[in-house]
Length: 503
Ligand SMILES: [Zn+2]
View 1 (cartoon, rainbow, N blue to C red):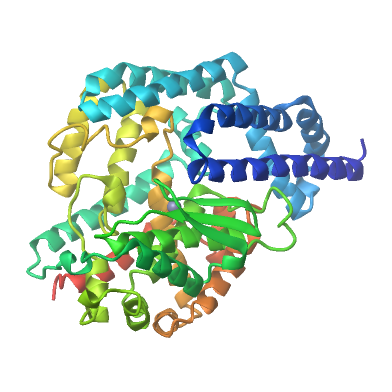
View 2: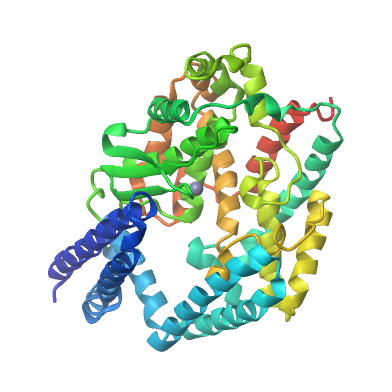
């Protein structure tokens, strides 16, 4: 096959992959929101069928043949084809080198383990989950050996699965800086005489009013309602079947309307990324955001960097009050700003505030690192976990339900996933610093001119989809890689000011 024909063939095959992915995204959204319970078995059969077809497209003989045809020309492909080749090759290698039977056994193990974990968490019974966790760790290590191409540590392979290019060496340096800066900063917050009263934003707001707020906030921040839809689900998420159909979900709590408001801003960050893909790649498999870390940087940018800024509340408070009950009529922008940034040590990651969030992630990273580099007994994990919470957050979980058993990830075999959550916050702060070199960020937010901010993010990040690796994408913006200094300074400045530390 000559190169031109191979490229044409490859694009046609990749389009099929995209079609299956799009159809499956719509099915997933349907299942997670409005689909009737009675149809579960039927839907499982249908999604299993499509998943098998898709698996064949990305790992079958046709893909093998196409990758082999393009391989000798790798350095000379146009950027779009090169990006598609990179993605397809990584996916192919990851799935093909592990024997199918091993892969199936692993899926079965984690399916079972997730059920066991759910009960173990409910019953606060770590011992019931421990043997499964032990097997999952062993299987994860074994699967890495099948696809090993160098002598990098096994955990590096897993880190790379969730964020291309990431290694323990990079994360060690990153979390080292986070630990050195945030642990003392949190201590300062705890000891500060400045207290923030969160209860002033917990007066009831009807669900009906909150739905209107969600619609208003999303549109105002730049989410295109004409190419999107807001729905409700137990766990909020963003669902993209194409650039022109990007849906988000939230959940409402009458006594905590800010929770949904920030969820909307978070999911809008993911959605605006997906809605802003460039014309040149919109119809290709590169149209999705490049990685978990970069995706999360966009959601955190809209949720925290914009949404939890003083300027945002100065802009939004008057308009927001038109949707809120009378109980809120005397609230000032400053009061909203402070309440939105209440920070304190807590046990549960998903409820953590902006300041402490990365400490929760750091603990999980340190433990995963131990699991994969030292020979530790899984039965020791609860004690290790609790000790780290005491050391970094100054609190000890009273039981394993609020400790080592709280997250679903390990029962699903997702080792290496957690650090990407923290990367999102760090990249968001890094992008803010770059943006401020050319834009009056604070001034724009105060005036509600979010379009100029989104235009910057679209130009530097959104429009490129997955053409570049996360490293190359960040490098293209300002000629450097992940740098925790930006994130650390951002938190020190913000929370130091809010809690009057060192003043
Ligand atoms: Zn997210």
